[in-house]
Image (cartoon, rainbow, N blue to C red; front, side, top):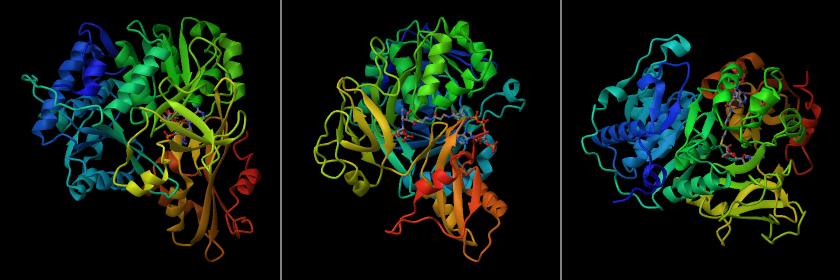
Length: 517
Ligand code: MCA
Ligand code: AMP
């Protein structure tokens, strides 16, 4: 019996090789590090536990826990148990989680022990069993570790656990991505989607078992979970697993690593730190950036300081990675490189779907084994975003040069990318519009020195006045912190064009300097 993703990523794992190391924290693992042998053992024990807890092939396992090596084991365990892994941003409020679990109806919801009380009703409403998973992190952040019910339910042996069979087209994960309508959509990713991308990237970026990846990304999104982790597993390499991006930890870990993946904010923060020098980077064989546009000037500063060029690539939750600048060959700054081997990327006229000429701006569309099979429970939405010939309409606008390199020039979707996190203004506007005293609102992004784009909101009061402090507080209960506007402006009316459409470009121009120091 085969389990496509597990077999491809770990089927030939060398049990002796060290997989991951989490420095500075007394994690629930032997000497704070995992070998591939540990990974095989722990993920089998977790998988056996999930089956005992009632997970059946195709069932969703929703997980909102702090970053730890064990959380990665839970991902692998879900796959081994035949389940569908559904990771959730740790910043999400209970109100946000309720939407996801009601929509995805998971068999199990795993949360942090500190959030058990607020998550129990959420799990009950969705008919999910609640488990808690903590990290023994006393040394890390001073709190006494509560390991939670998940570890307690896991037996000390895997007792001959056998992976549940799963084929290439079976679902391995659902990742929620916000949408222009304000409702988040669950992107369904198959075993083959994940395997094909991991294989292609590991080969293209020349990952081997000698690599040690500096991993400081969150593991509830494609970048940290699939690009960084799956590629490392595929190559049989190792990782230094940091809980998040802290310059001190990054600089302390760099000498031990060979490669790093990050969002542009990682690079601007490193460049702003005097301790990051040519020496810190000289032994590194690869720096990758993605999830948001990296400014040309950031590329140039990085190259001027280190003599190395960051490799920029382009992906989406729905498609995994689509394009990448080459490992060997010309990494063109300002572009995201050509289509990955096996993936087709084209630039077309958004209306007619006709292919455009070299250099013309159009809709970026993608077809290939990396592209998802659709949105969970949303066949109409899925149909709207695919062409009849199978191309997925990304919502990004770009050009292709004579060598096939793609440059992203904008977005047809109303989307703000802040520090690598996607924020759909519509979702925030719906929350603001529901507040008493608000007639209407417009949420938009402007340049931000740290996050690339920073979120701002303009509101029109229904009766002349509205208290923006109250609005901020109200959002605190409903929206994750990174989705909350950094400032709210009160306006008499929103700027509109003759069609009545809100002119966000006018708002962006007016407030474009808001974050400039
Ligand atoms: C934190 N805050 C943010 C963000 N992160 N606000 C806006 N945007 C953000 N991204 C808030 C905090 O709550 C805090 O609010 C204040 O901003 C300052 O926080 P700080 O401590 O500076 O933030 P941090 O904890 O250092 O986090 C910044 C970060 C992090 C390291 C850039 O956001 C991050 O790891 N981003 C990576 C996201 C990612 O992995 N994206 C990939 C998605 P206050 O002070 O008011 O409480 S996958 C994807 O996009 C596709 C598939 C792809 O191509 O990869
Ligand atoms: P998400 O839906 O969170 O997976 O974010 C996907 C979006 O991030 C894409 O549609 C792009 O708009 C953006 N993105 C990812 N990588 C890059 C990049 N290298 N340059 C510009 N935008 C990017």
